[in-house]
Length: 352
Image 1 (tube, one colour):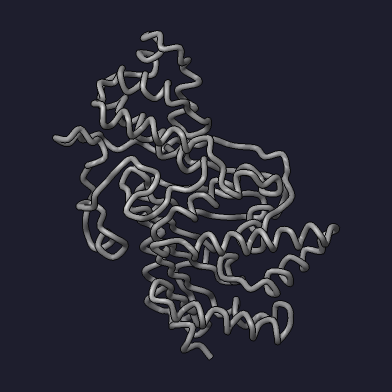
Image 2 (tube, rainbow, N blue to C red):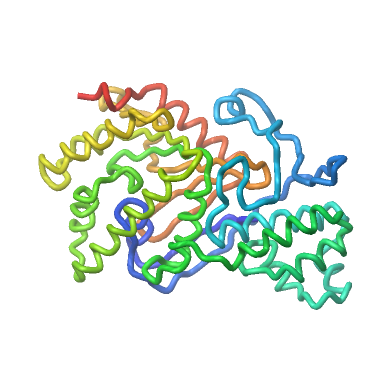
């Protein structure tokens, strides 16, 4: 489970991380605000607690109805890799929580079973904050009455809770942003809006350099390392099989502000038009002529996952941190907003 998470660090870190590169490490402060409520467990005939029903409706159809998709515990689901130790911990923690809930046991009941797992440790396991050993997973599955196939699958998944991807091992990336990078690399679909700047996943190196330079960094060499890491992030996002489905709406201001000068903006616009030719990429522009629009509160991203046990996430940024939302009503509201602005937007290839 991802709790509703507010992260704060050095001013400007979150915005710079997603839109420029990666900020220098800073002591982060985590504020845990109202954990999301777990879905009611439905155990299928095959013992798979992931076969739960989801509400349908137009939104479910538009953004991917997951009710009849196959599920599984492996690190690669439906061809999409579950990447990054934090994302694997998140997936495993939610599955163990659902098994415990289905068994009718509280965390105190688990402690009293004398498995050698304390209540704080169990909380950290279920919220995806720590690596988990296969032995602990097997002990918990035994206690919850899971069958052998589920036990073996979850024990295999536990191996990934300590395996590092490139962003996990990077000392440049703050701990609190590594979760987003892992979620982005694992998402099946990514919907985003930005009214002022081309988002980091779509920037050219020259554009990123100009945006980062506007903050007047003291260490120019460090800035270049951040830009290289951002390019690595793009490679991870667009280089996988099957590819992510990406739809981005940019405000006209993001393409008319001369960031880096005329040549840099020309190259950036050409890059966006080339990307938009891909079948899985849709880049659109919200013209000034639209006037007031539904997304005037600011930029956001919606990350969607095929596995219903990996809830969709809305990612919001500010100059002092980032916020992850996964309450269903909150995600649905941002889907509604995105649907409204996408209807008023035009393909980037038609923008002049």
